[in-house]
Amino acid sequence: MEFRYLPMTDEDKSEMLETIGVGSTDDLFSDIPEKIRLKEEMKLKPPENEYALMKELRELSEKNANMRQYTSFLGAGVYDHYIPAVVDHIISRSEFYTAYTPYQPEISQGELQAIFEFQTMIAELTGMDVANSSMYDGGTALAEAVTLAAAQSKGKKILLSDTVHPDSLEVIKTYAKAHDLELVFLKEENGTMALDELETHLSEDVAAVVAQYPNFLGKVEPLGKIKKAMKEKAEKAMFIVSANPLALGYLTPPGDFGADIVVGDTQVFGIPAQYGGPHCGYFAVTKKLMRKVPGRLIGETVDEEGERGFVLTLQAREQHIRREKATSNICSNQALNALASSVALTSLGKEGLVKMAKMNIQKAMYLRKCVIEKGMSLLVDGPFFNELAIRLPVPVKKANEYLFDHGIIGGFDLGKIDGKYENCMLVAVTELRSKDEIEEFAQLLGGLDE
Image (cartoon, rainbow, N blue to C red; front, side, top):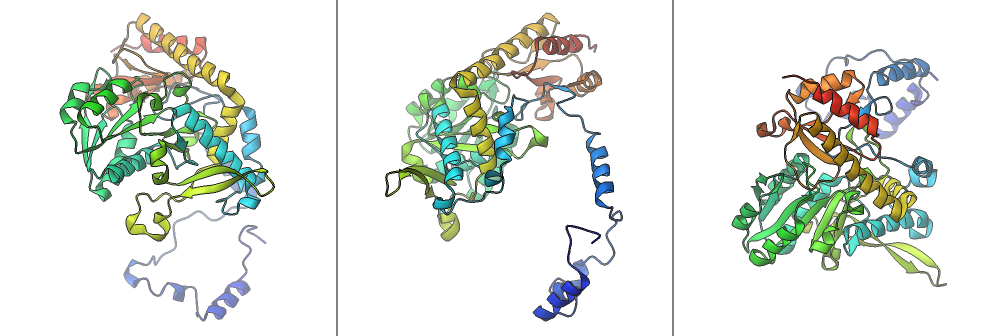
């Protein structure tokens, strides 16, 4: 057989057409208007045999720059972190790799327990009562949080900081249009949400306030001050925080500040950058919102013999059977990536997680010291986690081309999101960056001329 993955013969095709009572393959598409059908052959290369195809794909892949060969200082939502070797080993096992929705708990105990452990660790990290079994990514989770808050509070006005990730803001805009929500964007001031502007817009008709922790510029938002302002002027509004879960290994969890919903992305735990996806979103809430959470909740129980077991406890069924009342379109989860994050977290342990978070802060602080010594300045200063925005004497594109020639993937060009950030580079420093790599990065940037 020439194509081993396309085993259907002409006889098979004829038999199928005869069985369904159709004269030809073209007749199958007779309902499609003639004017929009493709009349000519598609301009594709002739098919190759398996060996030739694999050779071509391998040659193409080798043209890509990768983080095994290049040192990366690029973050902005996707990070180069340590992934324990055991992660790939576990997620490659067929019982996890091919698993689907665990509708039958009696044959899905391993999958259910893995998801339960994920929920437990996320709840502990965020300081919240309940976490779901994962979502598509952090941006989706944040948009779902906004629509949940609007439905729960019966309000339409959402206050969002400009320091939230711009991609997440775009997802929220899409969701908000369908739900007829009013979005109010609060300007950034010294790298964090402008508190004066927040207080100006706070009122009883506000459904939610959204902040990111640490925010897109790497700064640590003053969650306590934001919550205090909300209590005084918009007590019924929900406080939504999009948090980097690795940072929560060191920073005070949002739950301790009175957050109602905490979301984010667990890409930082066991999930490689891989061209920006797939990722794994998490969604954690207070107990009173437990039955409003999109997706699924896995619970622990005992069987009739008293043995520990796991079941699919709660699921927002409106999306399946009462669509007009649904607040979410999420009906699945990122179980495999959630498992990767769970394995990574378990491998690190509590002490390892704290150590990893501290290393991110310490190494970012060292880069801050190095770039200042080389004559550069920061866009904003103050508390940050592992990202900082640096002012350059040249356009970021030029700087990144120069860095790339020296085997370094540079930071994100902040000028792409706002002209006021022209020549500003957002740089991520993770636990994987060495002292020598940080010093070389600062040395190269410091040698750039206007």
